[in-house]
Image (cartoon, rainbow, N blue to C red; front, side):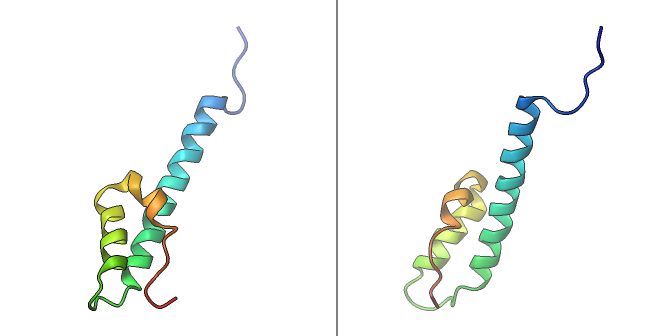
Length: 68
């Protein structure tokens, strides 16, 4: 029996999803911190939802900030 060298496709896909999921969550937290927290809480609501529901942060990280 041969010993496996390197990664399988499934392991690479899992690693890819994990890296982008965690990276998106962290970037979403940074974007929430850059919101102005004043009236019209659209930015805070969108990025806050991404922090509470981590898979949602992959989408919410792409929404614009208040200041931009």
